[in-house]
Length: 123
Image 1 (cartoon, rainbow, N blue to C red):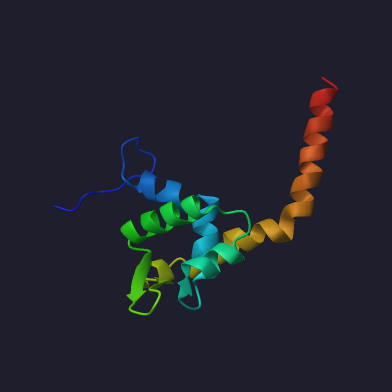
Image 2: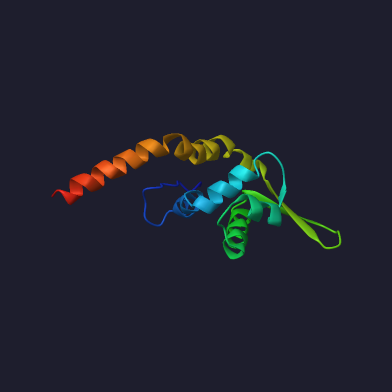
C-alpha cells in the first residue's frame, strides 16, 4: 500500500522537503544550476552573501533530497561540479518563478511594509 502524503499533517515527511525548498539559499542554488553544472567556487562567487559553510550544507541537503548531483572530476586540484538531477529539473520553472517574483514585486512589498508600519505606529 502506498503512503498518502499530506503536507498539512504535522509529521508528514513532505514538510522537510517544503522547508528545504523555502530556504533562500536552496532556491538560489537551484536557480543557478538550472542550465549547466557549476563548481562550488563559482556558486560561492555568484551567490553573494552565502558563506562557505551554508553553501556546503545546503548542497549536501539538496543532494540528499535527490535534487542536485555532485560530480568529482579527477583533476589537479580536484574539481567538483553540481547539477540538477532529473527530479531537480522538475522544479526549474517553480524555482525561477519564486526567486524572480521577488525581484519583480519588491517595490510593492516595500510599499506594503511602509503602510503597515505607518499604521502600526499610529495605533
